[in-house]
Amino acid sequence: MFWIWWPGFVVPACMALGGLGWKCIKRLPYRRKEGLTPEQLHLARETFSRTLWQLGLALAALTFMVMRSVRLMNVLPQELMTAAAIVLQILSTKLVEPAVQRALRENYGDALPNGKEDDK
Image (cartoon, rainbow, N blue to C red; front, side, top):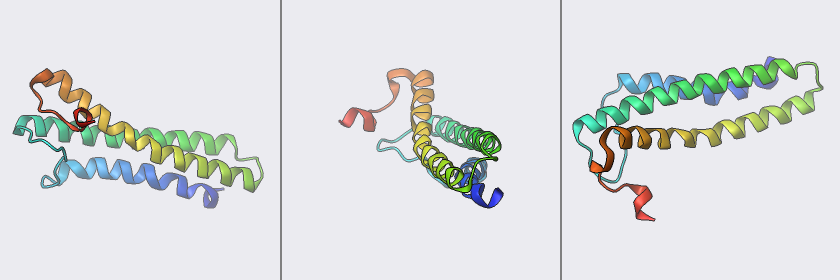
């Protein structure tokens, strides 16, 4: 069964390791179009890394629960569910950026420079 489901754990493992590694590597920038003050950048980096590893662990747990619940099915439905899980994991990575923007907006309000969302 694990040979079918191991690809479903690649994205969450990369997210969790990336989020934990982001704290250790201080030179990786948090990319925004405008300049952030050092304290805003620190908050953005901390929120980004925390959200990334937490989401990675949650997705791994969800994938494990789905894997355990469909273990008695045939191989083809399990492979399809693995593919669906991977697609949902990749789409859920877009949830990290709004969390960082929300944290910055809550702490600094309208003092932030205009970001990508204001360029549209």
